[in-house]
Length: 220
Length: 220
DNA sequence: GAACGCCTCCCCCGTGCGGGGGAGGCCGGC
DNA sequence: GCCGGCCTCCCCCGCACGGGGGAGGCGTTC
Image 1: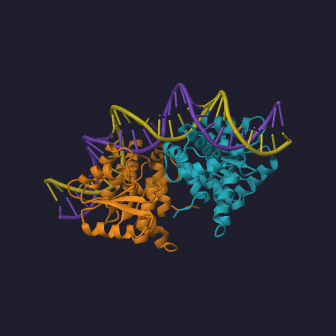
Image 2 (image 1 turned 90 degrees about the vertical axis):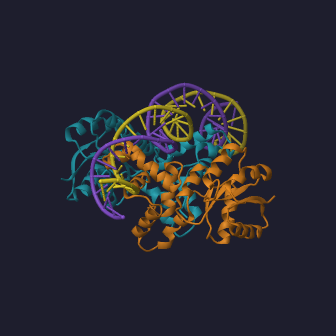
Image 3 (image 1 turned 45 degrees about the vertical axis):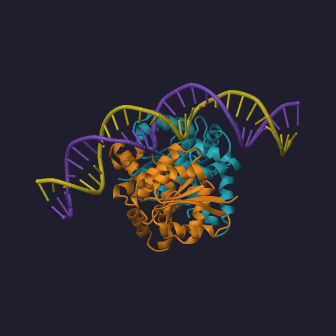
């Protein structure tokens, strides 16, 4: 049985594009479309898609609210793949934290789009922007610091937040980080919360994973 | 001011070797020696070393108990560097969890020994065996699965524990791992605890770090 | 001067996490 | 047969963590 997908985007062109890309796959079926977040819940109840490809910025009800509403009101909710134009759209992080399962750039190549849909359908999650994830590869053998700095900038981490993330990625607790930076634990908590929000991470473990995956910290 | 070190090992030969290696450094000073764990606490009170290089297997009081006792009874305790002959000595994990700051193989090269002492003195921690950390590099471009399997074997992770660690390294919570593996959360907790113990990790974050550092999971 | 971003610290609160125990079922080896 | 390893599940418990707020100081920018 194919993976069923509901497309939610206010631009018909985008819906058509996604439909064309996804329908080209024998194992993926687009079962419906919606032009705004408000229409999503009844459609999901009716069509019971496996995956909802959801734009973030939409009239009436945006992708964040729609995601939250879906997860709150629907039994066995579909997987939610957040679609956006801009990497590091702050709204994306909001949606991920609202419970979305994955992240997809509109400019992604068709193969990536298909891959993303299959992944979230299987229950895997695309925790954070693929763009960030691949930054290390882009600068690959070049300047490592450049890559790290870039990840930091694109994620809009402040210098302090970057320090904190680095220490988190060394396995330190908030109290230990506080001692190391000679500040209060409440301060560290603030920074940690900011890091989690900006990386779309749910907890420090996911943040550390993001740090490794993005090349912000490197093994060895 | 130099880093001061207290050597604790029941074999005079090992103590002599460590002393020779460390004294060769201008910034490291060996301030004392002990032949068993029972002698450590009074010596530490008297000498107040920065670092205690502590054997694990010793008569009277082993390294684990000595570490525990030190941290419990001494104010501003020294950093503790656990020294052992065998990688994956179960005792080592016990010592690390008792609060030791680092891990050192007796067969390590002099430069590595010096490096380890300096690191723990600075407050950094060597979370898990360097041997494990470098396994990925050893098999580097070769068989990735081989490396992962090997890490798994050397850490003596069972198959199930390996599965759990992999899911931890994807950022899943215990409940999510339980759902994925179709078992109870209590079961997952058991596996997680086993993984933490075997990796010498304090929490899941450190375990995930270990997974990345060892090459058990790879970025990208 | 006002506005903004950043760093700092504070409160309350729920809960996921991890420690420390134990225990039963299953299977393979001795 | 018995034993040991592994997987499974259970209890209690304390605490670090993270969410949700707010707030003051400080430097830069406009």
